Amino acid sequence: MEKIKINDSDQLYEIESIRQTAEHVLQIAFAGAAPESWEGDIQLYTAGGVLATTLSGWHTVYRDEGQTLYLSDDGSVYTPPTDPEPVAPSEPYEPTLAELQASKKQEISAACEQVIYSGVDVTLSDGSSEHFALTEHDQLNLFGKQVQLAAGTDKLEYHSDGQSCKYYSAADMQTIITAAMTYVSYHTTYCNALNIWIAGVSDKDELNQITYGASVPEQYQSEVLKAYLATGGDASESQTKTN
Image (cartoon, rainbow, N blue to C red; front, side, top):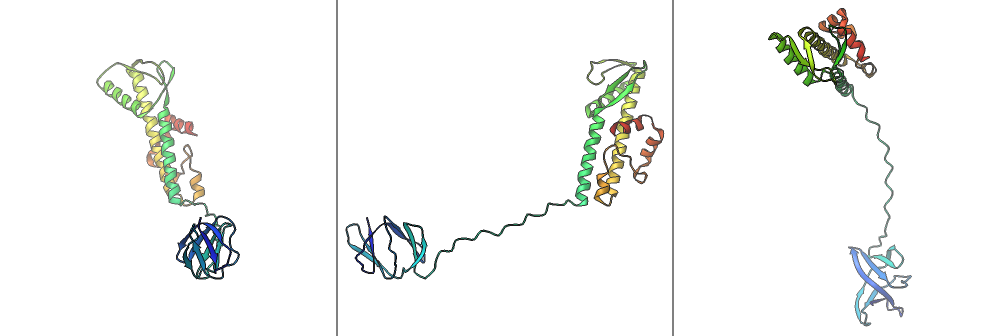
């Protein structure tokens, strides 16, 4: 095991390693005790007791880690890093009115689609009431039935929501189609009016008041919506179901 002496003293110190870790820093790992003073040159001896080299200028304890010491030849000492300044929490992001309007339009569009897809109740010629879903697929099916009616078919197969197919008279089929298209048209018109209202608001509080089913202020009502609201019937009932 290698040994060192300080300035030709009689005391030898066994070391496990010695190496330069930076331009001005020397690391020495001791097997046992370490010198208390570093005034003088460091003499490095091999395991066989032969003087290998003399190191001059390493007089300052740069860092003390117990049995591992770091010396500097320029007087520098180790300075531990300081804890970073605490970062103040950032203010929560406040969305702009335009961003809230875009989000509200998506909310209204999704609600409108859900209401339309849920379907409509239709009273048939025998006084019974059946419910008909109005997904895009259902609407296409009803459009096909309209074509069959125009061709003069007097008995048409169809099914109410969740039920098996059965035959409907031409009159009942026309009632179903008319009720369905009126329902879809009303909600499409109503949704469009809500979007116009959303675009016209000037503050977030008013925007928060807009929900699907809310009464649209008159200044945002289109001519078509006013006509629906004036006639009542299926259109007004449709709005009531969304409240």
